[in-house]
Amino acid sequence: MPTVLIIGGGVAGPASAMALQKAGLDPIVFEAYDRTADGIGANLVLAVNGRHALHELEIKSALDRGFDIPRNQYYMGNGRRLSLVPNGKLLDDGTASRAIKRGDLYVALRDEAIARGVRFEFGMRMVDAENTGDGVVARFSDGTEVKGDLLIGADGLHSTLRKIIDPDGPPPRFGRLLNTGGYTDEVDVPGVTGTENMLLGKRCFFSYVHDPDGQVWWYAAPSWQQEQSREELARTMGPDRWRAHLEELFADDDTPALDIIRATKDIWAPWPIQDLPKVPHWRSGRMLIIGDAAHAVSPAAGQGASMAIEDSVVLGQCLRDIPDVPAALARFEELRRPRVERVVAFGKRAGDLMIVPNQLRRRVRDMVLPILFRRIALNEAASLSWVYDHRLNWDETVSPSAAAA
Ligand SMILES: Cc1cc2nc3c(=O)[nH]c(=O)nc-3n(C[C@H](O)[C@H](O)[C@H](O)COP(=O)(O)OP(=O)(O)OC[C@H]3O[C@@H](n4cnc5c(N)ncnc54)[C@H](O)[C@@H]3O)c2cc1C
Image 1 (spheres, protein in one colour):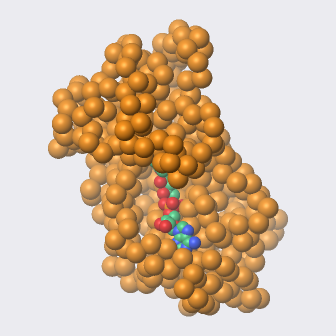
Image 2 (cartoon, helix red, strand yellow; image 1 turned 120 degrees about the vertical axis):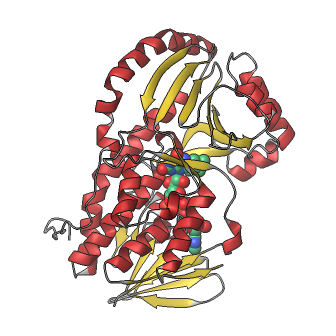
Image 3 (cartoon, rainbow, N blue to C red; image 1 turned 180 degrees about the vertical axis):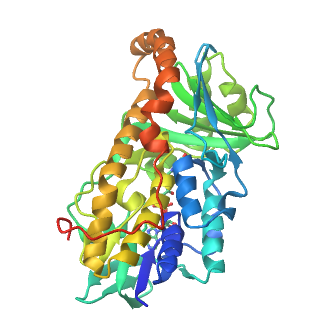
């Protein structure tokens, strides 16, 4: 049974481990952090296409702690209601897009993989790796060396394996937006569980949704000109300054954003929104990157985790059906690259809509928004069906491609 070293225990790591195990391989997951390091932070929406991919891997329990959000309701900063837009078409069995805290998703996928017998090694940060002809070797920060038959980098946006495969590859692209948010039980604002409220504010984009217990989950995407790392932002924007900045951004809006911010005890420190539009090299010999490491999507698309899970299914199919490892990895890239790059471009457009460059342009935007949203309401389901209606089939056989090898 070929041994697969998987670097990263986020979404793509455990999901691909389960897919590879199902395909008859022996995966081991190496995660840089101790298992107690997860469980906090932001939430995400797992879209219907990602949920369908999870179903193909027979992972049903992973989303138990989330709740369905089948629709988005848009508003302008002056409180004017725009369209109600579906969050992807429901699956045939009624499955809808689902909100879940990132940490809960990580833990659920990891626990499911462990329950299926996948080995996890925590506190193992990979620092180097190389092809050795008929295998691979991965080296870790504690000096450990591990040999395997192939190496999968599911190590996220700042992937080490990506830099090993191509040291000159492009760095992540800054989307001229920051991300922040929080949770609060201390506010009474309009809304129903299942509908995400998207507020196109006068100075900043804001989103909130009620969970089934009435807690409000929110995030905001302030426009930001200069690219700064999370650490630089923490140095220049302490919690009090950051809160004051957010309150100022929403002070003139006739929406619940300001009340929600004021009612939130712990607001997440900001971080830059980034994506990876085109990574030229995903693979080298028996090494491959997947998920955010290969094609990080702006969170504005709500598709990053779904792309990571779709990758996992397709990788499992390729390695199950194509015995030659480099040919299987080449076929994986051929099957996945066009779709993920299109989704990354869609995420960039969605993020650009959140940027509020100046008040003159914002006023022009606000004049066209009602017209734009009437059109979106009519066409959204059809125009985005290529994103949400994508369906993978685990039982379908993948054949090698002469062109890709
Ligand atoms: C605020 C925010 C909101 C988002 N919203 C959405 C959304 O609504 N919908 C959606 O689908 N996606 C969303 N995303 C994106 C989504 O979280 C990612 O696309 C998804 O987590 C990618 O999974 P991954 O496994 O590729 O990478 P990650 O989840 O980043 O996992 C990478 C893992 O690798 C580990 N690692 C890194 N380097 C090493 C190393 N050298 N050695 C060992 N381990 C290592 C890390 O510790 C981490 O556990 C959002 C992201 C953010 C930040």
